[in-house]
Length: 183
Image (cartoon, rainbow, N blue to C red):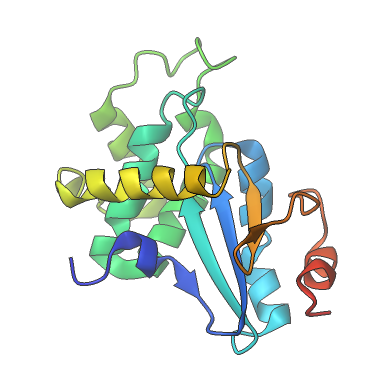
């Protein structure tokens, strides 16, 4: 890997840093994810550095597979491919979750089935990198980094290295800009 997936999921180059910890099948993460492009456009890439961190959650049972595939997408097409895959998963979220986290039509879905759905919805061949052994180290790094910063749930927002619990997926982009000091 020339650039690790965690380093690939970076947009902008400003002095203000926002790291957002997302779980790729979480509805609240999806709500936050849907605002990231607008946030970056309004803040300006010269003022904000936005980093997506993926934090698989154990109660979202398909999450490890989805997370690994998104990280693997960076090896195919960098951050843009990963963004497309994550966007597709969140748009088609019902195809990647279990009812009440334990039942429903996706209960018999295999890992290969998850990958095929991700490819169908995103157009990115995530199966081609899924078995790359470096992805396990990347997933462990993402989890360890979150825990070292006291982050256990998603979405969580970290501004300039500090968790900001008052930021929420329910906030408007304008509210985020205010909380970032970029309004």
